[in-house]
Length: 147
Image 1 (cartoon, one colour):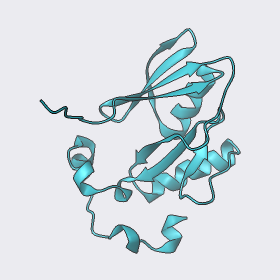
Image 2 (tube, helix red, strand yellow; image 1 turned 30 degrees about the horizontal axis):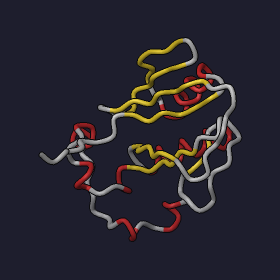
Image 3 (cartoon, helix red, strand yellow; image 1 turned 30 degrees about the vertical axis):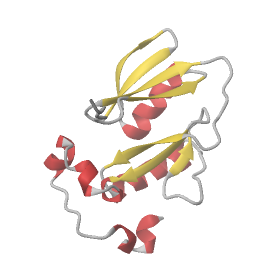
Image 4 (tube, helix red, strand yellow; image 1 turned 45 degrees about the vertical axis):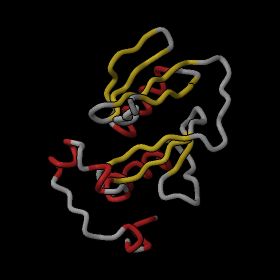
């Protein structure tokens, strides 16, 4: 029997202060904490996934490993960029629309629903309920919208 993968269940990041990390991700992305304690926390990511946050004694940032989060639209990308750069004084990766390293060195890539293939997104209830339309080809977006 062939194995069928339904998606990604969770992502794990390492931090040196789980409470601060929960505050950061709650503030920037509005993540809801599912449970936590004793140097660990679990936050809801969308409808079916979660992010586990574990405290470690020594942080060892990765070079290219990362995970991606999807927000609704360009306005939300701009809000994330604003919070990251103004409030948290983080630098965005210059070659990407909204890539950054969190305060603990974890690399995060942020896109919006229009960056993704409709085939991948249609099963998500959130996308269906949002009533989004996908009329603009990905490569045709105006240059200022990608900034």
